[in-house]
Length: 280
Image (cartoon, rainbow, N blue to C red; front, top):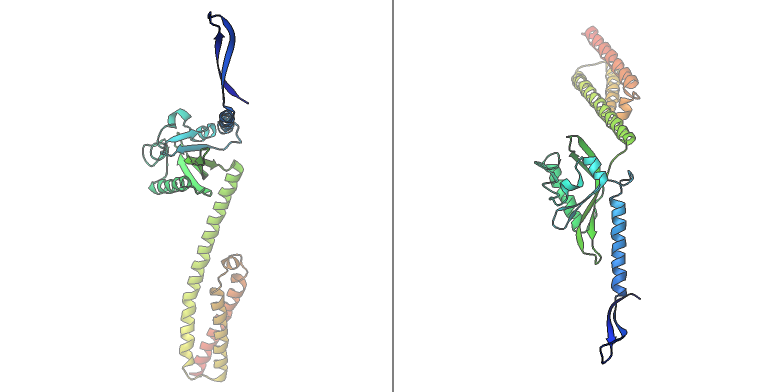
C-alpha cells in the first residue's frame, strides 16, 4: 500500500511532547496510475526521440492542428530542427504550398495531405500514401506516409501521429530502374501501335481494290487468286488485331508472319493484275 501521511506531535496537559500522531490517506490506486503514465511517457520518449537510424521519421499534431512531435529522424530528413516547428500549425506553417518550412508540390498535394490527416483524426488509420516535400535545402524528398490517431488513457483522440517510410538507396535505385524500364516499354508499345496503324492503312486500300475486282468478269484462276488474297488479308488483319503488345514487340509475330503475308499478298496482287492485263 502507498499512503500519504501527515504527522503531528501528541502532547500532554503540560504541553510536553509525549508521542507522534499520523494521519494517512491511501493513494495506492492513484500512484499505480501515475507510475504507469510516467513509464509510458518514458518509453514513448525513449522510442520516438531515439536517434537510432532504425527509428523512422515521425511527426505529429494535436487535436487543434499544431505540431506536437518532430523526432530526430524527421530533423535529419527535413533539415528543420524540433524547435523550428513545434507549436506551429502542421498544415500551413510546417507543411504548405507557400511560406512553409516543408513546401509541398502544389495545392493538390496539400489537399491530399489534409484528407489523410482528417481521416486519421476521425479514427481511421490510413494506408501507405505517396508523400513528398522540399526540405530545408530545397531537395525534394519522396516517402510513404502512414497516419494514425493518437489517444489518451480514456481512448479519446488527442491528435495524429505520422510515420514516413523512406526507401533505402538500393530500393530507390531499383525503383529508378523500374521506372526507366516502364518508360522504355511504353515507348516501344507506341512504336508498335504506330507501325500497326501504318500497315492497316494500305491494307484497307488492298481490301478495297480486291472487292472492286470481285465485281468484274474473272476466270476461275483469277478468282482463286482473289480467294488466296483474301486469306492473306485476313491473316494480316489478325496480326494487326493482336492485343498482346508484348508478343508483337518481342518479335513472335511481326518479323515472320507479317512479312510473309505481306510478301505473298503483293505477289498475288501482281499476278492477278498481270492476268487481267493478258485477258484484256
